[in-house]
Length: 610
Image (tube, rainbow, N blue to C red; front, side, top):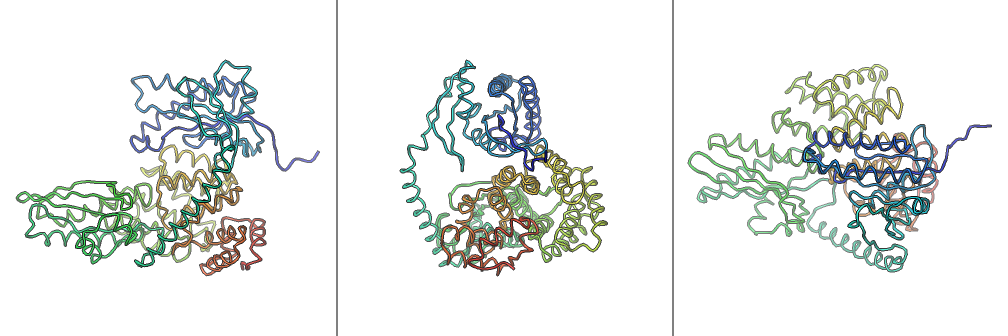
């Protein structure tokens, strides 16, 4: 009998995830990881007791297969009770809580992993579940209602993303009883409401863009920063001496970093003279964040109070104070720049620190951040500039610094991927050696996920090996780079649902997607995974950005064509081609030959991709 190309079966799937895991990690990373591992041991114990099989995990999420619906439900109940008991102990440093979803459906077996609707719906049910709760599908409920003693709460028809299902809560406690709107009965009303919402959103978006164009501000992936002139509280007669110097110094420091846009000092002083509010600054200049500061002087000692305000929300998102002596004013200026750059890097740009304390100075931090932005261009020009900046940094901190070693590894990876290597085998061997060195250093967590992608692309080419490295990286540090690389690994292994989840996690860590680097890989994952309806939702608000990548313009052209808007489809396909869209561009990473041929055939009515 010939071997089946796809191994399908019906399976009962349990999906569970930690609630607010990222916040726990931000508060106390090491204790959170330690407590997660303890909870995982509890989960493994109850899984074994109920004949389950853990087939996939990604840091704080776990997917388990069961031979029986009753065993799956009893396992879920036992786990939640054990976790509740554990959290009631006074010695628990980080009490973790879980949500659980259980479904039965068709799955595809890929080695030891399971893919398909059965897994997807379990994950959707888990997202629908309450904290410390369990939500199950109707087919599970029908199997277990007469065989268990638990109380169940009918939630009716629910829709999460593209999946629609009849769901039930298992009531572990009477307080868990809730009432959700039944999706089916509201469909006509929701459809009408959605239509008005779309019109409102599109109208707002159009008006916003008109306002932006009148103020000469284009849509971009970069955050725009305005440094508001510093205020001298205790020395108003000499306010210009300090405020202008600090303002100009701050603008100069931030302007050197290419990952943000910093408005000129003339704009800063104009804003102050006209006493513009944060909301007015946001509307007129499309400013995302405003840096404000005040100076207090007592004898020879001074204090600078700093605040970073979200202009749109008019709320302070970060603050700090720096004490210094008047004679150290220049050191104070340097420290201010370092503090703000570090915040911007971690919270708005990179989603994680580049160990600024290891780099030592704001100048080195800027070089590092600019090198990162050049690498993300993933083209020969960016590769050359990345190496130039890495050379500059190496001259200052030493070639043997683990930070430089990791940078050299990234450079070699890109050199190989974009076809610039004249001796690929030697470069691959050198890349492996460099990464092994970093894995033995205090930058191990930064190297783990990168080791995974190197294994998959150049070394073992084994998805299981690559995923294991990715899992370790996420367990140790949920950084935007770890999530992005993990998403790439899952994409290359054709596990598109987990790829999408990883890229979405990356965007959650750092909502501002500089250069649309994450989005440019999330959208292909959605296309390949069959989530084409969701692509429009992601791209519509940002598609006219001045730095929109060619591939995203092409996908948007595809969406407009499917909607029957041929004029827009032609316009965006031509923009994509002007930005460098070619067959080689698309097949280098995100499309195999068959996918490209299908994509191109769809677009042939409006143009060809050479």
